[in-house]
Length: 200
Image (cartoon, rainbow, N blue to C red; front, side):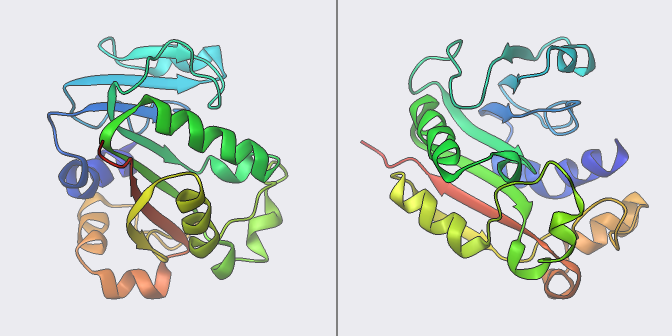
């Protein structure tokens, strides 16, 4: 998808770096992991069909986000997930995901999370039948701290809610949007969080 190619080239690549071991949690059709440069890439999803959308160099893990048995302890530099946590049915499920991500991250490794911020879209949030767990940037931060992470960055308003919303579709306009954080505070309805596994 052109939007994700532009997001990676103009924002996430600089945030993550290109010499990292990166895992995409709930990878979907590989929109992020196919477009990010990394030393090694893992894609994790419950849907076996996801594998066919991934570039050949990506290692696919067919697993729930709370039990990624294919990956050992302390082997990933960055775990990324987008628009996933809201599909978990309970906070207990979310806690289990946080614990599993913490397990596979190397000490000092980062968990990068993007998702709809219930504080700014309380009505539209429930327009999707498979949304269960409402999170704001504040409740997300609290959950991450309770799970043992050090929260590095919280952006309450990052991207608009969906690709059908006000986010411009042309790659030049998307790149421009990413360079203008004041505009995020007007159009943004998704949070961006970066949390770190404490160094030993």
